[in-house]
Length: 152
Image 1: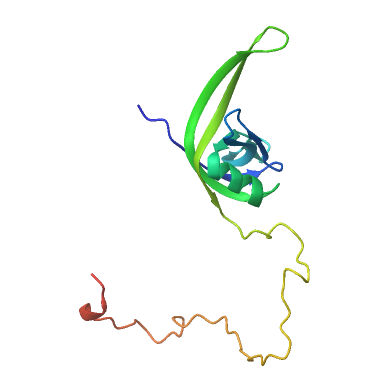
Image 2 (image 1 turned 135 degrees about the vertical axis):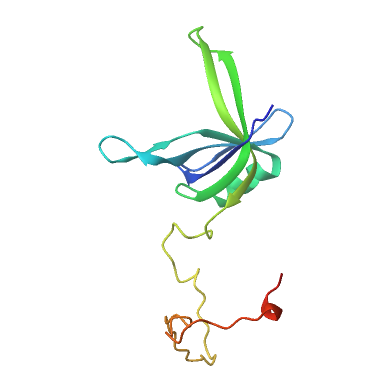
């Protein structure tokens, strides 16, 4: 049997961290994952799976991610059920993330402030000119490569 899932998406809100009775960190969040196709109106749709992480991964997610953060994760699907307050059976499906990768710099979704961008005084700055030219688009014909130049 195989139960593996890989998702890439953005957090819909700030992650919530709680601690189990034995002190294990548990973090829950919802991920917005775009579908690869459009609906009949030509609009993209998304799915919103609930994700749960444990231990150090849970602490890292809670401390470093926020609403809108782009993440990639790997985990498994887990279903559970319980009796609700109204006596009806409630079914839940979660993604239990074993690994969460942060796919953007920490402050990418926030405005840059002066304290985030250090100002260096009394330092000599080098003037560099950036060229966006393609060095291979010179039009001089094919590039000669010998078998000795190849790494394989």
